[in-house]
Image 1 (cartoon, helix red, strand yellow):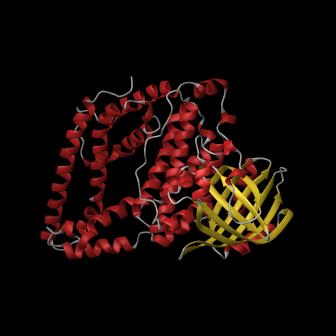
Image 2: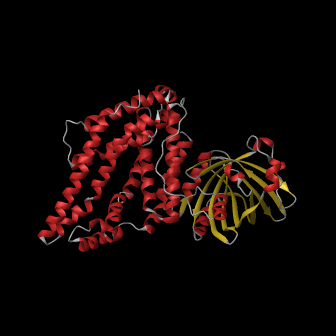
Image 3: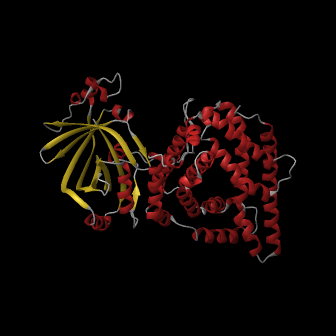
Length: 505
């Protein structure tokens, strides 16, 4: 058995010229070019797929190689999957060639062998180079161009893969950073096989889904909680990047921003043990990316008011000119092409690479003293009890029922409330779900109220631009009614939230 450690990137066909320039500067140990034909097999019920197993027969000239890939790990484009290879006499697979322990327990190999059939194929030209890195590591770089096909359906393949053949994982990231210095590379979490399975099932792609709680075992250490939190956030980020590339829903970008928020909050929560200098560059780049996405709130608000030709504004006499003004604002926002350029930019790619490498190499460790190491090795549950109590005590003071909070007051507290709610996801699975949700529910309602208040801002900003005094007055009254209703609901939720019993000890 071997374990593949590789980075995958989606690139455009014209990336080859940049790639060849970079390769010309490297120390090449071997190079080759070959046509690869691959057939992937599964049962009609896709038993292998259900167990995250891939079975492939690859033909290289007159040689047939059967490959079995079992469940692995993907973190921001870095793929780690156990792999088993065996030579065949033809294109028909023979499952008995792989060791018994390669398969899940109680797997009926004989039954599966009698059912498997071709499901899809990938055919591509592979240009390949074995590169010697300065630290002595060896990396295989492959540039693949071709197609994946399932029946009449097909998709193009244009990918760069970096596989560590020997040496240190850091070398993979070093080479990747060098290759993406001019942009044009996007980290890929979908393998050729995954794309083939989608084509075979005519699967349109994943739906946007909310950021979920981080799943931790009860005996998790604080360091383990940090690592799983970062992995979960990166996976959510990467999933929704792919969703956006496929269908361009604005909600996917919002979920990317939520994932960034989880990462930033995790760094804050664990900042009592990990010095800020350990993550200084990462935090700076995350802040940059949040800035690149800060137009999303405005876009969401404009989409709401422009839906159904401004139906939500139907009570306003000035609806038509107001809709026209809102459309003009919407046209000034970044479009899909701008977002895709961001995804393919060097800075964006480097941020994901650095995050992934920092996580996989535990890049905070060199900055720790013995006391910090002991704290990180201690119980996540004990740390969470203290961390949550402190954070929510501060929030309780900010939202005290003794304070009268107006629109500006609520909006001032939005970042703090969002940090607490997102930070709570890091430890959510360590607590009783019913008590946790009862505590969080009114605060989530308040957060939604804050977002609804912000959605009024584009109209509030345009109201003074109307020449007709009656129109201005009507819009002003309309805004105040909306605002008063939201503030009343938020005040009620605040009263409920302040009386809820904490779900931590």
